[in-house]
Image 1 (cartoon, rainbow, N blue to C red):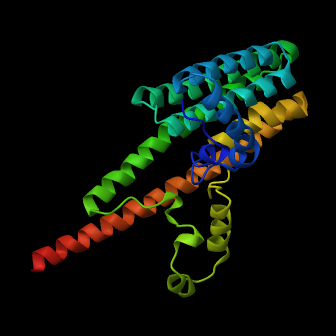
Image 2 (cartoon, rainbow, N blue to C red; image 1 turned 135 degrees about the horizontal axis):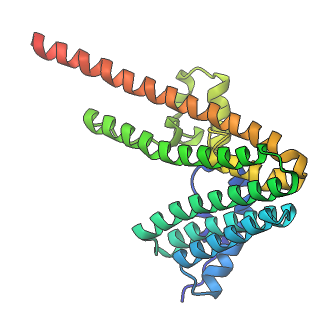
Image 3 (cartoon, rainbow, N blue to C red; image 1 turned 30 degrees about the vertical axis):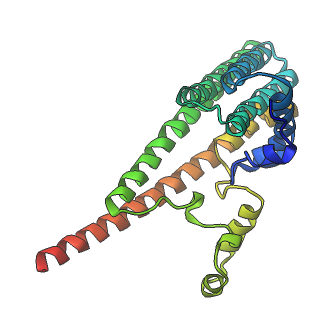
Length: 272
């Protein structure tokens, strides 16, 4: 059996990922993935199932008002969920079913933990706001992960019609991938410089995504204490909604440009 190095594992990391994953999860997940790859026969699907089991344990901790334990176990569950993808890419053992299992497992984990958190705090305080908190977290998560693939599909359809190649993530290439002559022509605006800075550190430009939302609700807030659950979840949810509105706006502009270009081509075709 091949022996892998830490550099091999580093090569399996996504080119750009959420800042929570880059800074707080990958440093641990890469080392765990190295041990799993070299010393076990665990499969990516087996790791996904283990991650889901840990998610259920985290939900049980939240339901019994063990907030710190629940936060730690949720972090471990997410970390193992990152390990399964690294093992799949490292060994080339990923499968379409594994993609489905990973996707559905994430949704189940969030629903279980949101329900556990809501139940535990409501049983303790009889404050109905905690029920609304659990429902809101579940709805936001489902909306985010139903909307994202649909938006991606719309972009793919438009590009297929235009015959365009799928661009790199965030539609902006990292600085080192841009030719020097082209760099000098582009205006050095702060958003572009900031995005390139993030790209050099493997961080996506969408700073508040579903992953940061989960981290705020299920890790940071429980570690801070019960007082932080509602305000931090509300703040993270509001920021996630702002991010989603921005993404929808970008999608609208993208499709509008396509519609205008298509109409122009149709007029030119008629004139010819």
